[in-house]
Amino acid sequence: MRLFIAINFGSDTKDRLLALRDELRSHSSRGKFSLPDNLHLTLVFLGECDGSKTTATKAAMDSVSYDPFRVLIERVGRFTRNGGDIWWAGVRECKPLQDLQTNLSDKLIAAGIKLDQRKYNPHITLGREVLTNVVPWQIKPFGETISSIELMKSERISGKLIYTAIYEKRAIL
Image (cartoon, rainbow, N blue to C red; front, side, top):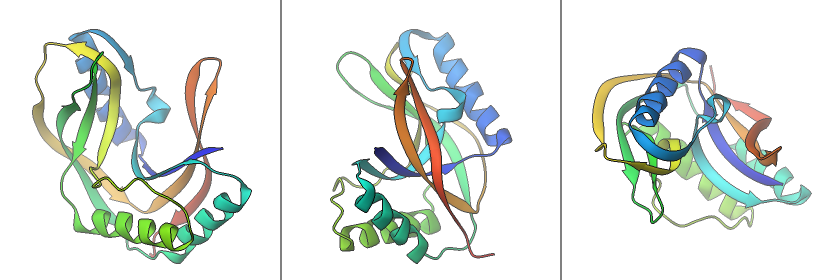
């Protein structure tokens, strides 16, 4: 199973992200744009996991405590790639988010799970392989209070990338 830990958003935030995605799409000649249900903020990408890794991941999630915190989305940017760029909505720097991501990563590594060692760059992917003349832009910040994280399964079904929550860890309320 291909897994990652993510923050999923409520309908108001998701609607605003969809508006950004659609604005980008309207100015693009090509791209693979994120499905509405796939708009999320990845905390940790795990990749292929067997049953024991999945169990260890759930235990790591359970061992991390966090209070609810607010995430604000404040810009649209891109990662430049040959064949089209990855466009994303960027998240404002947020210590509770960074602490949660670091704590999760540390617990997973301690459980023997290998993780990507790149610096965490919180973003919500709007589209891949996008060809456009648009330049990144700032937006009026919007967001929501985060009170849960989810273990997500990624799979291709009928040619579409589908993400399904298989486990949840709620914040301390």
